[in-house]
Length: 146
Image (cartoon, rainbow, N blue to C red):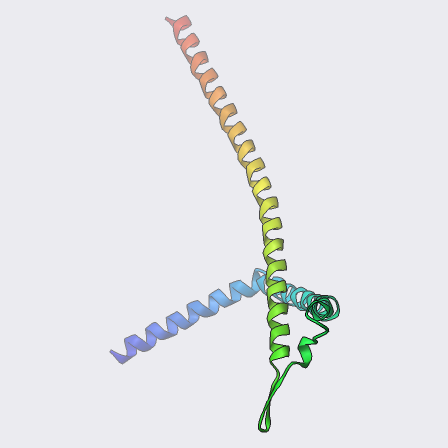
């Protein structure tokens, strides 16, 4: 009984290892690495946008208040809720930008799909016309031979 379970575990492990090899060989790991690098650079841009442009504007609107300096002192502990607010704003802006990017990419892929569907529909129509012509040709030949 234990040998069967051990054998099953080994087979599952080998299957997982094969999947991992396929994953690496397909180039997905390179795509993922590129995504992480671009995401990191994009994050820096958004952080700069928030820190250098948006937060000063919000500070002026709310009377010169600087969010990054907001904090509460509780005995020996310092709670910097201003930094938290700034990070939440960073997150919301990054999420919104990614949302917009995905929507734009989605629109382009829908256009490509529609174009491909039109081509497939045209091919189907042509094949149906060819089929019909072949049927007619076959009928004509059978009438001539009678």
